[in-house]
Length: 169
Image 1 (cartoon, rainbow, N blue to C red):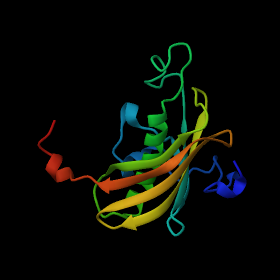
Image 2 (tube, one colour):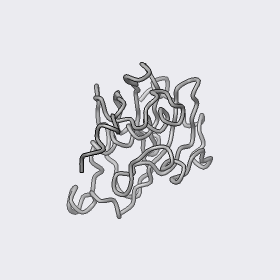
Image 3 (tube, rainbow, N blue to C red):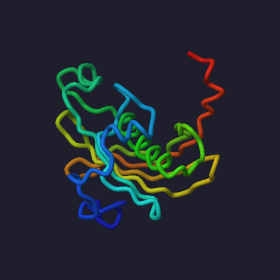
Image 4 (tube, one colour):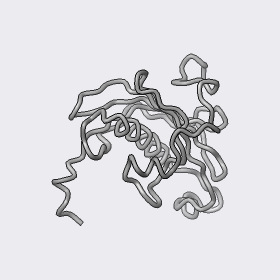
């Protein structure tokens, strides 16, 4: 992938300089247990609307045993979920939507360009493209392993009406 297409160059962030660890991420977004798809945030610029972080993948991921037996591959939908959590973290940290919880509103132009396996560090880059306070946020994202693009696309986040969901479950 030509360097000019990356949201951030690897020299623009330091994977060893953690801005938010898992406990801070949990303070900002609600995903827990198997659905936690971020390990750390390493870059967050509210002015540029860009953030970066990663997910360290282990043999203990819930999908390893079944996707696929003997050849564990991170499901593409989980790469997209990791990107959505990155965008949600950025949105919630800076109160961009003015809501309690951000959920998926849609995805566009998603492409998978490589494999991700246990032992990999999935680096997630996200950039805000559009914001309508109280209505939606649209971001582009890129996922990389060893500086190689493995997934990219755009996603939309929308406010989740938490109060309306209170009676479910």
